[in-house]
Amino acid sequence: MNNRARVALIAMVLSPARAHAFGYLEARPGVPDYEKHPAFTSADPKIHADLRSALRGARASSKPCKAGSATVAPDWTLDLQSNVCDDKSFGALQGLVSRLAPSLRRDRITAWVAELDGDKEPDLIVGHVDISQEKDVPRHPFLSLWRLKFHDGAYRAVHAGPFLVSEVDLQAVRAFGNISDRKAVFVRHVSCIECEPDVYLTAIDFDATADAKAYEFTYSKDHRDHGLTIEFALPGMGHSVDARVETRLLPPSRQGPHLLQSFRMEEDEGPDEWWAFTCKGYRCDYRMHTGQPPGEFMALWKKAKKL
Image (cartoon, one colour):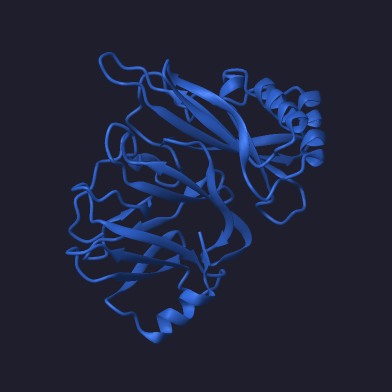
């Protein structure tokens, strides 16, 4: 948001040398670098075939469910969410993923079944929680994601992350931007743990290139400062403006806009703000209205679906 105080993201500095990929610098102890050391290493054709069979038999629920928990500290656990709510089906997927990626801890693995590219072959989005371990620094949970896609008899894993999280779930899997033949994955993450955090979304296209690619958004007054985050919830309390944020998506289109936001300000924070983002490629710029938005904007707002 324009001229607003923000808490810096932890471990969220994009590598200039890999701007096409979705990996981050500032590696933290206890958080593996999956770009340098891939987790999915097994080429056993039987495991790949068994995973394909299990994935085809898994039923995706319309609502997430708890799928275990990850221990961050003795008095702190994070629930893992999935859209595979049948215990037997989820256990089979979790076990096969752990065999394909033996360096991942099975009890920190979760998964979501999705159809991302319209080929009628179910895809698997795998999540794994790593815990940072630094001397004299509290432990932090980071979520890494992989999209597993079946091709030429085996699954190929594409990585995105890590994300600092206070809960482990995906916000949505939806068609987005000017791309109508595949879907983006919207992951929810936070700015910090020992504070009142800003809550962010990052929209990832796992089929952009050989690597995953995130959409970039700008909230800056000069429209120059783009980042990989969508502001999803603001804490106020001196850390940011005190506003209720709502985010909606419009169907993919060539001309846009593609994403709409309202910032309903609390008393003394100034007029409400209404933002319309249009994405060209993977870079999204905005038009913003204050106070009461024009009728054209409200017509789009009513057509858009809440994210």
